[in-house]
Length: 182
Image (cartoon, rainbow, N blue to C red; front, side, top):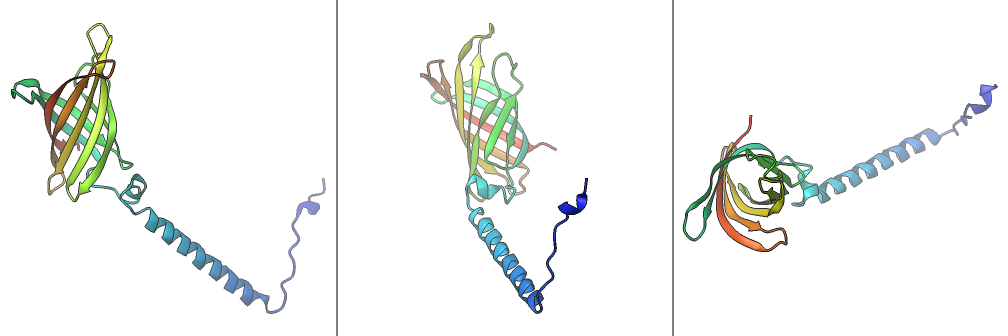
């Protein structure tokens, strides 16, 4: 095979064209940097895309202690459930607790910042009885208050229990305290 025919031909530069090429290259670089700055500015908003440019203080894994009570009577429904919560940089949230995996799934949901150290989050999980039959789901929606040192939080809100048809069975009052997992 003759590899010479695959070699590109390089044209000889025209006299005086070097400075024009340099100027054109610099112009293209400046325009490209301007476009990158515009894209970064557009993505610095409060949406999920904006959070990708900045790690929010809530992002990370948390050790959580959850209590659920009857909103009307104050009677304890779930005392001191141990859980792990994960707040992801893209605004998604995952949760699991020490309940047997045969009785409930992990929770999946989302979160967003309301103001400096205040957030809202929501997640849902499915529940099963001792035989493994699906008995419904639970949706949790909380207001979260991050401590000034960003190493703990307190949250509170409703825990809505649904049957398998999506009918609301009852609403519990839930609260949680958490510390950053290290």
